[in-house]
Image 1 (tube, rainbow, N blue to C red):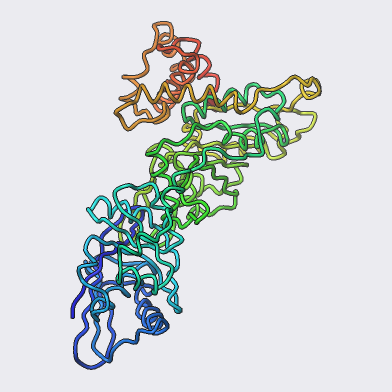
Image 2 (image 1 turned 180 degrees about the vertical axis):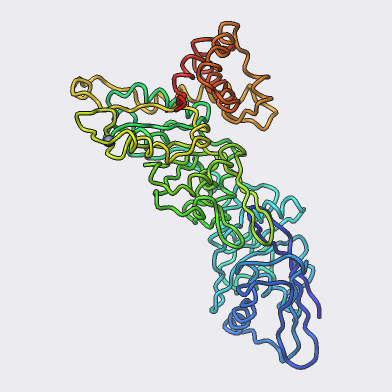
Length: 508
Ligand SMILES: [Zn+2]
């Protein structure tokens, strides 16, 4: 008897449908698995056979063939165990064929029949919904990942016994499912974060730059001596980020689902991600790695912040990897079996000391030679620095500032302003794929950045005087647009541009 169960394979961020077919016929007892499967997928036959036996179903001494189609698509991961098990059960006549209609299945089967969680459930469910499937059978732990979807019913199973119950009486099984969907919707915007901007005394320049960066999604570099408050500022940036839109939540959750970083307790990414990889991070971990690549740090930071503390300490190779995604907002990984594209629209926040000892240009403490200072700064390549929109010096806080005891602005106060600017951008970019001023391409800049005559003249003068590249010129305009938005002004004027220019790293 022949049967077929629908499942899916994950290739990078892409989902491809896979048909798991089983055929049980008379002949020499055997179990064969075909269809371009990786070793891990092939092991499904052993896991499934043992698991079935442990729930009391022994396979008949017959010839069994399991085929995974299409044959030219490589299948990875343990997520095919469950569809293989169900296909066999259907081929044996235990599961009725018509119950498989409209059903898409993923899940790993343990030897005792437990269904273990797998990565990538959300994108599979989205794929199923798009393809017109009505139900998605997944491991119990993964059920809440699909909570945001309304067009497909998630069916959670804990073990093979659950699977059998589902097929014996589907309606009863569904009626008894706890209402998981409802609570998955409460993707808490409310959260406890132990840090607040009010704890930073002084540093008006750094705070202003951080607010501009967050408001328009512009890259930020903080330069200053150790202990001046660079990381303190960077670590408080999550407290002023605007919320994710529903669409962005789905986008970010999809990435975390594929990376296997969701859990029953956190089934949905409700906030913008904040990733702070250590400087020893490998280029692969930053960009995404593996034969069937998984998202790297830059993709995990998509729609959120990627913080690189002590930027010059990162390997040259790691830093250079950032160049292309910082420009294109996505990262392309070439592998022998194909090219993979991962989203990578991040707000880069970087921090660095101005020299090896950290105290340049304070000559009372810094004895570094100019050559050393230049070499230290030179660890970050010109093209990478070109992609930094805002560079700000964070100097040590004076005793007077520290002891003045003046109340500092809280994160909530700053965030209220950020939200206002966020709304302005949402209105401006309604109907386009742009979300922040930082997303604008040169053609968009022409459309959305109306500059006053005075502003144009200033730009023209500075373009020559500062030897700006075309890229730098566009980035200055984007930052100016955000500064104008923060001031509530429609046109970009000279003062907005002057401030933006002040954050630009000068040549040399
Ligand atoms: Zn020094």
